[in-house]
Image (tube, rainbow, N blue to C red):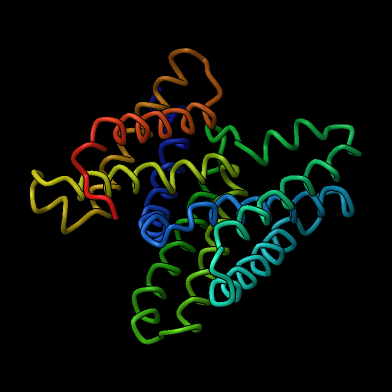
Length: 258
């Protein structure tokens, strides 16, 4: 059993490691749809590759489209007071683009399902290792460079590194899995940090709390999917979303409104 579930557990842990950082930043900046929008634009790039080139150069095309989307969002963050509406429209454009292109494919629905949530039980260890190394490099770059930049340069660095991260994650796990793992543990950690009577550790280190919470949720979700033969990706999405909704319901009355 452990050998069968190990790839899915490793994928969830690798995604959780860096996406919790981005998730906390995104929630506190109130740009929740950013992950969905950039992830969906990455999926749109993948659909372009599948439709035009039969899957050739899928990752480079997906990454290029995501980077363009991230750059545009970084620019618009300084030009519009309604950034969330703009990001939501980017998501709608990417999603509709995927449907338009894959509607012409004989395996369009199957390909669309994969773009939304892959079966992470069958992820290759080599792919997981490569993505883990990439995320470690991105994390190191953020630690070193981000403190030395400000203004638009800092904004652009954030969105472009986020685009690279999301593109790699979507290729490995799918848009919805990435969205759930990015937001749910971070949201729960922030909810706990905003409560009046919690250990100081939870207030000072929400990222570590998000890692702990996310690990528990993802492990439980993968075990449930195995026990009841549910689709692993969608089970991870459901369990993360359910845990976040439940945490919000029970903690909402005691948290501070921002």
